[in-house]
Length: 345
Length: 224
Image 1 (cartoon, each protein chain N blue to C red):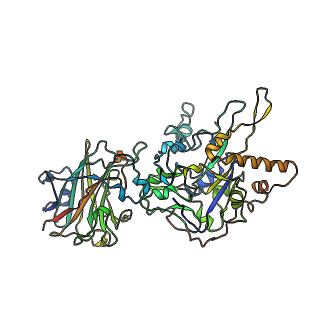
Image 2 (cartoon, rainbow over the protein chains, first blue to last red):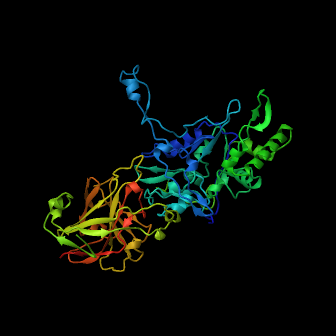
Image 3 (cartoon, rainbow over the protein chains, first blue to last red):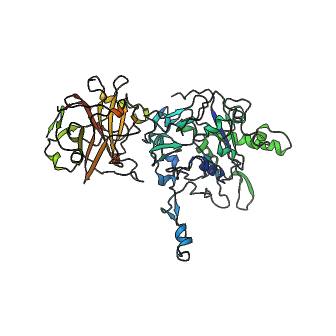
């Protein structure tokens, strides 16, 4: 099944080698977009430790997406699987005189959360390993959510490829939540509508990058248009091909790309450094597909160039010396973007 | 009780308060009409994803129905069974029970295709009741599958009673609604129109087009 054609595709590249799991991106998004009633449990931007179950819990086993162009059944994630919004008994502990008898505890009882399995990772000491994986809606070229919606409430903007849910058309059926293989759509029980990352389109329209990328202390995110040959996105994705989508086998053609993480080396029984990476290549391939090994080798070779005192355009681009100029290339109103559309989160 | 092709909305002199009570003794004096349901045809679903539904749906097999009017207001009492009633969205029950009535927007439009929720030329008016808002039915109009629009203001009224696994819901409205000429059917005593029904089993995650419905439209005759 062909993807949806757009004039320009807004896209993001995240360099996983720089992510430190600080969640500043998550908070930036939360503060800006998900503060209203019914959105308390929502994190349109998440950062999870890999390997891990992530959010919603076990999302990679929940189905959805396409196989040979055919929609695949998906599971509807529950709020508990995302991690519900916890209220804490501050009043009881701090102001009721029971501070010595009780303790701060969440209500409802905490079962899972957005970043529940933080830093658990995998492997055995001294060769345990983990890395961080930030995720937003992938604003796919072939969005499973859009296809699944019987209301045609989900649309992909022709001018920039951003996928939005028209809040006035959504009836809360949640087929989109089942169909999205990345499980990045949330349900607002108060408003009875589905909601998700909007790629900060009101900012993009003004030539300003997304909140998650602008606030990132690690400067891991690049934002721009996929067809802009002078921009970092085109170079990293198309020209040098060192950024690839997560789970390409889901068949939705994501427009969020990742520079895969290089790994520290395993130690042998005598604690000597070996040539074997701690992060198994098979695991990275399970996330990013078979091309990931080739990319790792390219990155290592480019790094060696710098170590040897040479030049590497790829590494220079990934490092980004000029903030924010080297990271975001978002012409204001590219493709004749529309003005802010009220009620179309 | 008989299976019917025509529903007669009997004229009565009882007031709204009496007629809106699903437990009211008044209703017992009216014949119960059985409307047989079938699952909606998946081939008609506007989304390929929904067409791939891989489990049994359309769990409500029939609905018992009665109708009256008092010249000013018209009422429909719907009764049906579910295996496990769902009245609220919770962690384990993401969808609630529901029921709906469908009437062509114009009573002199016999070409209205009820099974496709109307068409561009022949719109339909739906009265939609949900178990999580039992006293707040929604007025909806549509001109084809996937086109429903909910009115900002609903002039419908309803009361519901859940007895064990049996729902008894009375849906009513003023027959004439000049406030919503374009969004609601205008009814008068003496006319004949079409009517259809649907029900959603929340426990079976039925929502949208995944529901049980009355495949053949039924004649609605409003007693003069």
